[in-house]
Amino acid sequence: MRIALDDFGAGYSSLTQLRTLPVDILKIDHALVAEPESRTGTAAPLVDVVVRLGHRLGLEVLAEGIGTPAQREVVEEAGCRLGQGSLFGWGVPAEHFESRLESLRPVGPRPLPAARSGPPANAPARSQVVRLGPGMRQLRALLPTDPEFSASVGDQNVGSVDSGREMGQG
Image 1 (cartoon, helix red, strand yellow):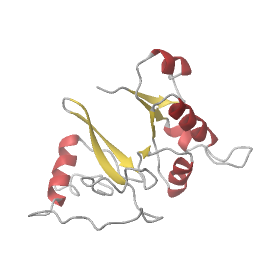
Image 2 (cartoon, rainbow, N blue to C red):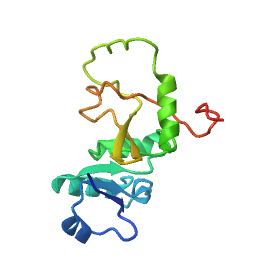
Image 3 (cartoon, rainbow, N blue to C red):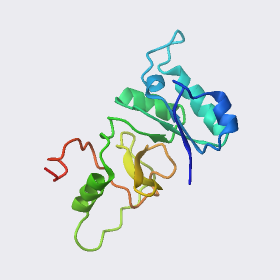
Image 4 (tube, rainbow, N blue to C red):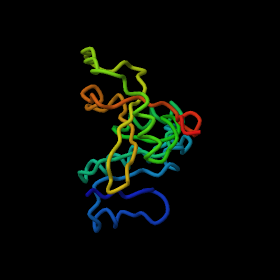
């Protein structure tokens, strides 16, 4: 079992919790990701600070609320490998997501992906389902700057799924 500290940088999350709780994943609050340019001229300056803090403590860091390509760029530049938000698609119940993946699965053997030296500069993020516990799954995005991006074989770019009709459920 892995534990994620959600909404870090807002509300009740604190530095003390990082030292006292057995946290594995630090989820940066969407408000920090959406923060406008600071006095220094950099957008979302606290994202960089939180990513470095999380990595220094040996934690995985995930940025929440990535809604624009500019926010994605800030997150990637900060060294954050994982992200989620409307830019990658809206959240859906696990059973809908699973049925969507099943409908995208080709019939017959899956062709091997062509070898590539690295992701294209403007490659879309790919999704990955992470099992959190019985009946609990989380969809996370692998960004092109993630070292595992090109090595991941089972992931699919599911785009934006935000209605039952689009998922074949309605």
